[in-house]
Amino acid sequence: MTLGLAPKQGDLLCSTVAYCEGRVPADSIYGVLHRECFSLFPDEMFADLFTDVGRRSVPPMIVAVVMVLQRIEGCSDREAVDRFAFDARWKYAAGGLDFDYPGFVHTVLVDMRARLAASKRPDRIFEVTLQAARKAGLVGRKRVLDSTPLYDAVATMDTVTLVRSGTRGVFKAAGTDLGAELRAVIGRDDDYAAAGKPVCDYDDPVARKVLVDALAKDALGLLGVLDGRGLDEAVTQAGKLLATLVGQDLDEGADGVFRIARRVAKDAGDLHRGPPNPARAQDRRPWLRWLQGLMPISALSLQCRASSNAA
Figure 1 (cartoon, rainbow, N blue to C red):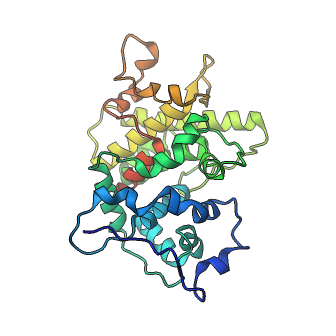
Figure 2: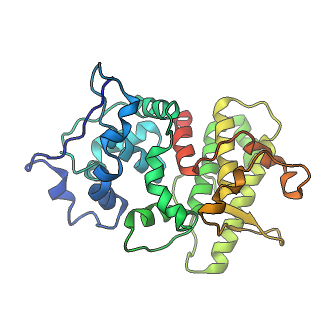
Figure 3: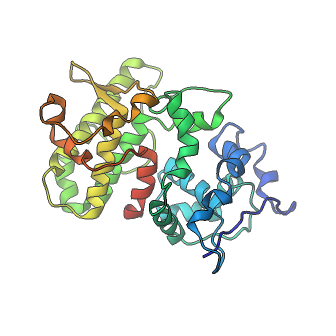
């Protein structure tokens, strides 16, 4: 399969640009990706994934934009390609494609994840969006940075949404019988069925603190139920993802309350120093064993990969 190239000039009469400009906020993720997608995800950045012979691929820039939006909106592969086909904002985000620009099948996303996983830079799509955010200590926080709207758009997909999404992923992979057992340890009044940010008064620091702690304890309850069991691949991957999210983005205080981790890039990888050490009290917890063997990888990119199991 050879490298496909995204069109840089559309049909003035059927382009999504004229329709979306003025309707889609410029500082939304759709507006930011529309302006920056060609510089963030140039097709040439993925040239090593393809050969010099064969049919043309779906342009990798378009696939990368779909993968980013898929993660942000919590879509399965099939849902993501449907939104690309029918939601004008998704085509607008992918460089202002025409309304009738052809869609593609969901297996294109599966194939791209497989090609990336086998490459020397498996996380390249998210490196460009998260590297600067990590250097600024933005992961797990919500900040307004007028000079870097893309990093703000990614950062506002904050910790509580990520952790809740990871919990939803475990339930989705678990099936009926195991799911019922897992639900028995959930403390929040939440069925974890619908995607999205948990309901909370985010202007109230006490409410935020209670929400973060409750989400963390629900997540750890699930991992405690799964620990030590023989699980299928989908549940195992969902469990690893949830363990990564809890360990990377949350810290437990001496009072036993979980809070958003205030760490910057130099210590963001501390979680992955090596396998748990039983000599350390914090490493004797069963859920930390889920982290053994994980490579340093952003939670965002890991979920994007794992989503193929839940599609």
